[in-house]
Each structure stands twice: as structure tokens, then as C-alpha cells.
Length: 180
Image (cartoon, rainbow, N blue to C red; front, side, top):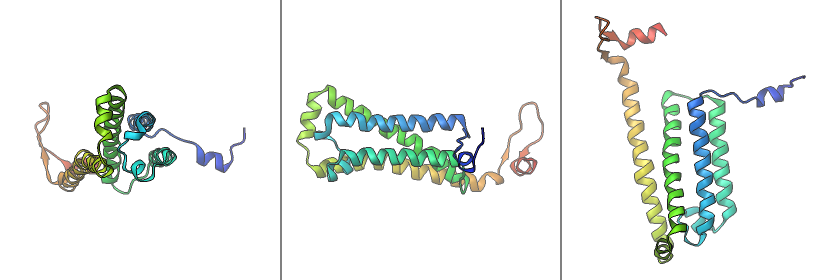
């Protein structure tokens, strides 16, 4: 079989199996979130849906998000370690948030009281609640995580690690970096 240049470029390689599993779970939970939302559309709190009333736009944006995540995964190029950390962190937070969305949607499907309560909320109240969840469960933890990682990344070369019980010397991180 003759392989052309285009086919070579399209060859997808698993760079990190654990990260690939995270990407797949992210994609699955993201799609499941939109799928379960289809059963409670009149009560949906997603701001994009509330502003546009477009189911197609919801599906399109989810698919675009998944394609972008897959592109980043398979390109396997990150400017800095913090960019890679951010990618993994956002995927994990996304899994949690979309999982909460799935839970909320299923809870609404199974409990008429939830539907009745949400039916009484205005669009502004739904968007406010949705924004609060995003702020407290994604944006604030992300900022803390990135700041913590940057502090770690900028100071790790200045620390000394205690030796293993079998060793008697203190290990300097600088020495470990030079060995690589």
C-alpha cells in the first residue's frame, strides 16, 4: 500500500494513554450532557440555549469543543508545562461540570418537583445560577491551580529533597535536571 503525504499527516498517535482516556471521558460526558438536556429543554439553564433557543447550536458547539480537545491532544504540542497542566486541569474540571449537568438533567427528568421549580425561574435567574456554578466550580479552582503550578514550576529548582532511606545525601533538583 502506498502512503501519501496527506495520509501520513492524518495518522493519529496515542501520546499518553491516561490522557487519552481523560479526553474520551470528557467527550462522552460532554455529549451525554447535551443528550440528557434534550429531555428537559423547556427548563434548560444553559445560557447559550436560553439566549438562542437553538438545539443545533448546542450540539454544534459541543462537537466543536470535542474536536478542539482532540486536536490539542493529537498535536501534542504545548508552549510551556503550564499550558499542558491547564489542558489536563480544564479537561478534569469539564468532566466534573458536564457530569453535574448530566446529574441535574437526569434529576429533572426523574423529579417533577425540580421541573416545576425551574419552570418558575426567569431566564436571568437561570443564567445567574449557571454562571455561579461555572465561577465556583471551574474558574476559581482553575485560577488557584494555575497559580499554584506556576509557583511550583518557578521555585522547584530552588528546593532540596530529603534523601530516600537507602541514600545518605540530600538530592538537589538542579542535579536531577542536568541528568536528563
